[in-house]
Image 1 (cartoon, rainbow, N blue to C red):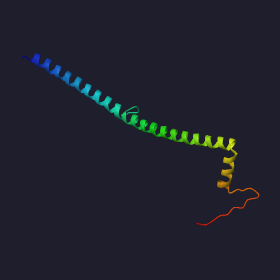
Image 2: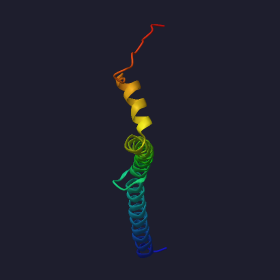
Image 3: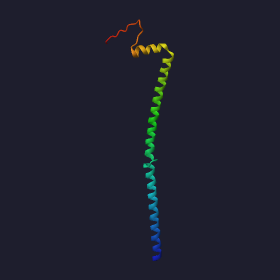
Image 4: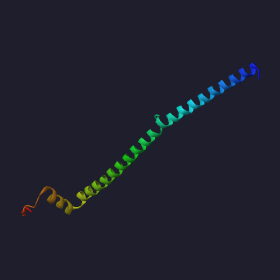
Length: 104
């Protein structure tokens, strides 16, 4: 091999090393961005957990809402339920009744 060929081979190897280094660094940057970035894997997992938690809260609140609607409907429509609630929760009685309380 002549010196010119050696120089050409040396230049080609340098270009290959530089190209390979740039490719590796680019792939490394993209990988880190995909895992740790603002829209990365960890952020996705965190958002998914938050969504699941919020869905559970929504289901719980919906259940409570349904119970309150049922109770409200009963209070509006059922006089016996109103009387029961007044007696049990508020200790009310009719004018001709006496309330006896016993200690257990």
